[in-house]
Image 1 (cartoon, rainbow, N blue to C red):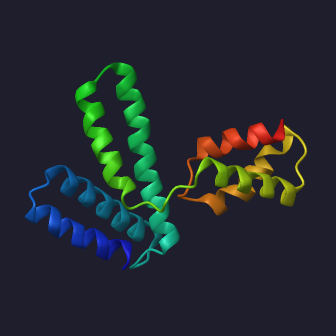
Image 2 (image 1 turned 120 degrees about the vertical axis):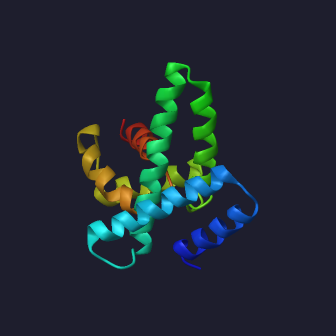
Length: 148
């Protein structure tokens, strides 16, 4: 089942169950996917493009959550936590820290990086491998640890 089919089914279910928050988030995700398809000039996005849109939606919410948390806006923080949980339902299973560490080690060996000056080269090689499965800041942290 494609992501759009899953979103449509979940949207119908959310309507039946009167789950306003879930319905709102699903509609936002669908709109983002459709906007991306229009922007790229295609009728349907590839799985990788859908994953990019989902990752972007999740990152936007996490960034907002951080800002609202710093500002002490608990009302908005709680709403965003709910939205993040819903978006994460559609993301692929996240890599564990051990799995991510192993991928980082392998990629550093493949690239032949020896110091932090080659971090950009390592990040460029690793990000396509973990796209949607790991947070970029976590990947960055592991790369720094293994290169130092």
